[in-house]
Length: 102
Image (cartoon, rainbow, N blue to C red):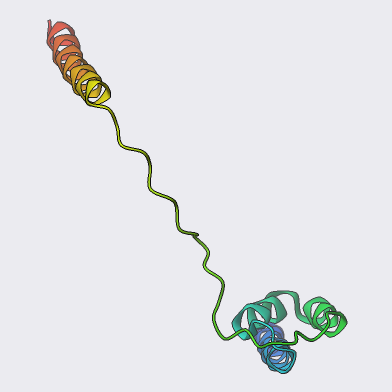
């Protein structure tokens, strides 16, 4: 049983390495395709063979989070209302805690 698991793990790493190598040759994400090859072995390798080669290499990864434009300034009245609601909420928490102790 241990031999079978060892063979599966070695096979997974071989497919992962081979997928990563082919991905590098096709100017694709090498680490991403390594893990796809590691977990999905032959299916990931077939998918990688099917995708076309990118013209320019992926030197810089695309940002996951894009820059958010700054929000407009908050009016003074809105700031005061927020503080008032926070104050009322804190007072209500203390009142409820006091009533529950009785």
